[in-house]
Length: 265
Length: 47
Image (cartoon, rainbow over all chains, first blue to last red):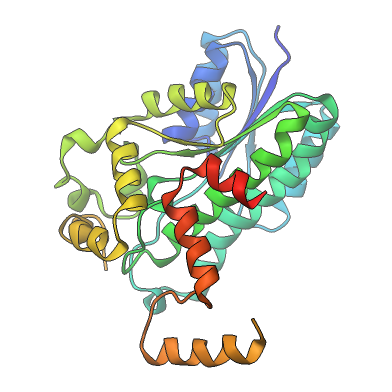
C-alpha cells in the first residue's frame, strides 16, 4: 500500500471531498478533517472500498483554537508524514458587517485565516526538511476582484490567502516544496446552499460555473507545476485580468449588476 | 516620508472618504507599477 499522505481540511463535501477522491485514485493515503462526522465516515468508506489506500477521518471543528495542534499531534502519534497539505475548509457569511454577530466573524477568521496559516506553520518544516512537499491553499476568484458590500470578510480573507500563499511559494521553492493558491470561481458544490444564496447564484450564467472535479484536477496539476497562484478556467482568468488592468471604478461599475445576484445583504 | 505627512494626508483622505489612500507619489507610482507591469518583471525590479 502506498504511504504518501495528504491531509485535507473541509473534506466532507464539495472541493475537499473531490480532492480526497482524486488523490485516493492516484494512490495517496489520506487524513480527512471536517466537522460533520456522518459525511466524513461515508466518504472514508467510499474511498477505502474503491481504492487500496489508508484513510483516517478526524472530526474537528477548526474554529476551535486547539484543533490544529490536535491534528498535528494525531499525525505524529500515528507516524503519518504529511507530504501534501490541502487547506480547503471555508464558508461564506452573508449580510452586512455589523449585522453579523462577532462570534460568527471570529470563527470565520479562525477557520479561514488562523487555522490555514497555523497548519502551514506546523507541516511546512517537515516538508522543507524532506525537500519534498505540496501545499494547496484554496482561495477564490473573490480574492482577486474588487471588494463588494456585504460578505465583508470573505473577499478580504481570500486576498490574504493568495498573498500569503504566494509569499510562502517564493520561500519554499528553494526547498522543492510546492505551494499554490488555488482560485476557483463559481463551483458546483453545496457552498451556496449552506450560506443561503443558492436561489440568487442560480441567476448567474451557467458558463461561469465549473465542476468541483475540474477545479481539483486543474489544482493538482498547478501544484505539481509549482504555480504560485492558479485561477481555474479561462473565463475566471479573464475576469481576474480585467480586474487587474482596468480602473477599479470601471470594474466595480461593470460588476455592480452581477454582484447583486450573489451577494446577499 | 515623515509620520506628520503620513498622518495629515491620512486625515484628509478619510475626510474625502477615499477608500484606499497611498501616501506619497513615489509609493503611488510603485503600486501602479505593481498593478500594470507583469508580475515577474515587477518582482525583478523590487528585488
